[in-house]
Image (cartoon, rainbow, N blue to C red; front, top):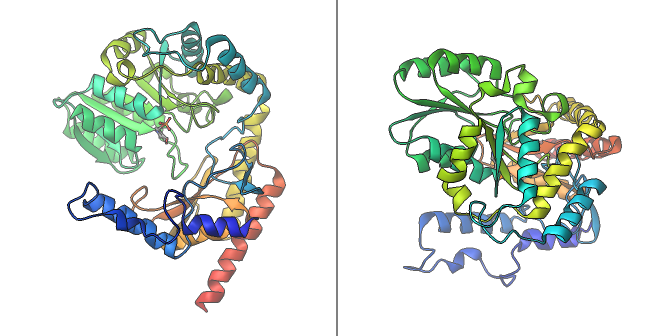
Length: 427
Ligand SMILES: Cc1ncc(COP(=O)(O)O)c(C=O)c1O
């Protein structure tokens, strides 16, 4: 590993600054940044720099997949979202390249105006079929897909009952819609039932993630569907970490749970995780999708997905059916990763997927572990509060279809070293 380059990065990650400048010095009294959140962030970054612990946004010099690189040296990624390990897959790269050659690098407009190409429609049809929905619409991101669906369907007269660990984009969609927001305890269907009963008579949306991105556990969808039916509520499921991952051929949480896909009113998701592309989608009934294409701001007022991204999604849908080995390897690797973390006596929470947290509790401790792992040539994501609850900071590890068995041995050795160094320092 290139230790000097890593140390230099953690000292001053943003090259727009001279090496000896504190970032917080840019906060001038009465200036644009003289607000608590800006000062708070810049001071926190300076504190991380002073301890040489800043590891966010490390600029990779190779493809983002298990075997990547930084500063001219190999880097093993253990937090990439590319669950199936398909980034750089020859068929997908060829499809994106051909699309760029045929359609160019942009569609030059918003979808509703001049930005729709045949490839969008073909991709939407294939995606809808994959998740068992009548129709689907592509968006510029999964974030936009959630904002679009929630703000177009719900308003301040309505109630959103959401899992307390729901993704930020759903919360922001609720804010944009102005709905009354109520949270139920994570995956606690008894609590959800209580809240549904308390809001009987209101128009209610229940929202959950199929797979929770920081914990790797799965929503109990069959019970949630039964409850939403009993109380006449509508259900939105964010499949960002489930599509391509859960169920046969990665068809998602409904397929995994044995739920009729059409019992989920609104399916949303990101296409930049298991799918090696970018963008997001909403899937559901024909009427829902046609409405969102005319009545949701992120669809109407944002440029269309690029041809290359659409082609990558279209081809991925074929690859995951033609080549089941990626999904099978991902699950075998998920079990390996879990046994590495559990085998060292570390806390992996309730994971049931390739996302395996190492819950370390303290934020500085988490930063220190991520930084020390970089010294071992392993890049992981440190996830502090407020992305997770206070005292629940963690490394968010992730197994993919592109990790090799020896990668897990390397990870186990490095984590083991860190744990014993910590013990030695404490003693
Ligand atoms: C559960 C969940 N929903 C939505 C998103 C947003 O997706 P995107 O990155 O495509 O905007 C993410 C990822 O960042 C996510 O984890």
